[in-house]
Length: 191
Picture 1: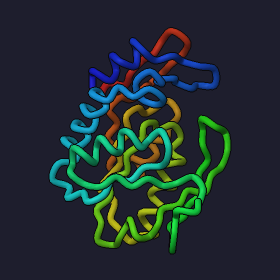
Picture 2: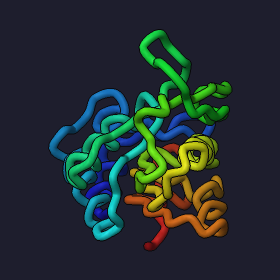
Picture 3: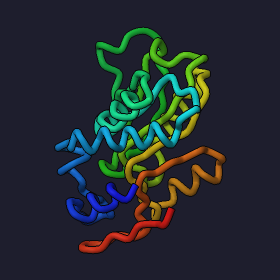
Picture 4: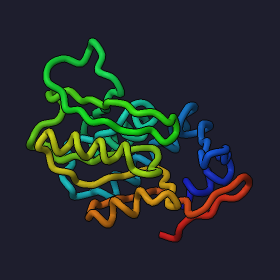
C-alpha cells in the first residue's frame, strides 16, 4: 500500500532497538480516515474468504482490526493480555513474547467469541518476529475455527517473522514491508 509507505516515511521515527514509532497515525493517535482506508484494503485482499471474525491482540491491534472488521462486515475480537474479571467462562490461552516491551504475556479470548464454525482473519498493526501472531494462531487452533490468513499493517521484513509464516503456508498480506531501517532511512520491500 503505497500510501502507507509514504505515511511511514513522512511521520515515522526509527528508535533505538529497531523500533519504529508511528504513534502519530497508528499506535497512539489514530488517523481514523486513513485507518479505515487500511481496513478497506485488507477487506479487498481477503474478499471471498468467508471471514466471520477478525482477531487481534490488545491494544495497538484493536484499531486496525476494527477497521478491517467494519470493511468486511464482521465482528472484531481481541485477545486480552491478562485474564480480567470481565472475561468469564472458558478461555483459549497462549503465551506470547512482546518484542516492543520485552516481556511475556498470557493472551486470552473467551470461548464464547470464537466458535468452531468461524472463519478467522488475524489482523495486527506490526509484525516483527511473529510471536503475537503465533499466539493468535494457537488460539484459533484451540477454538477449532479455520484460519483465513493474517493481515498486518507494517511488517519488519528484516526480522524474518513474516517469511517464517509464509514458509509455514500461512497466507500473510502486509500493507507495507520494511526491508531495512535506520535513523533517517527506511527501505521497503517490493511487493
